Image 1 (cartoon, rainbow over the protein chains, first blue to last red):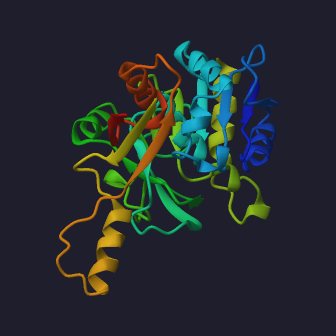
Image 2 (image 1 turned 180 degrees about the vertical axis):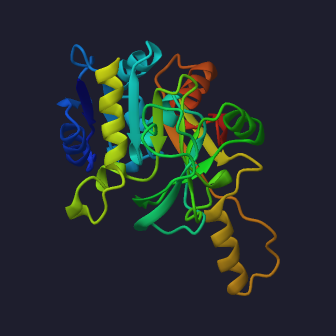
Image 3 (image 1 turned 30 degrees about the vertical axis):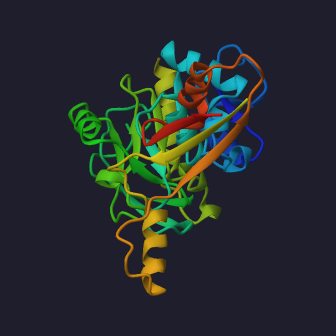
Length: 222
Length: 76
């Protein structure tokens, strides 16, 4: 099992994500944004949180057009898995791999706290170890996490059971309390909360571990 | 040649920053403001031969996120 974690200038959750993958049994390669290809045999790409390129222009916009992101899009379009967290979610929406966009938080404040999520679907390799409706506590740390999709796209996401997590109490104004969504083929997940920051007792919470363990078992059985 | 690109949140997309500015103006006593939308202006210095279509492509691919933003181009 191999994971690749992309490192952009300004990424700051790349090591946390790598540790969470390693803990679940993945061999992890760190991949620089200027690289033009992913290492051979990568099962899943982690697009980490942070402030890639200083959030200039729009969060994630410049990273989404970096050389490695073309390889990430190719990987996903071939049916490869990807996990984008926080800035990684913003980047994946900017690439078009995931629908919607992340706007400035409705309250205009940067929010850094642990929030309660509701597992909205268990029909993904990311969420298979949770129960539908299960509440988990995962930290958020973002200024631009206010998820937007138009009404037609929202209806499509609901019809296709593509909302992975919702907020129990909406912290940022996101449409339909959405905290994370998956791609049409269910192999790309983007979410604003940080499961990799709830993956060790020292973090103060361990509810994120089940996501990385579920991914590991998906690749073992595949 | 120069181009100026105006990028705005689309109508119907809530603009929390514009709303905050509207509230602040109201609190300062400017009571004739009914709405504020905040956007950005991007000035491009273009080489000879660049066309309007080139700038449209730049907007579509990078300068605007057309899921939530609209853009207008002024060439001059």
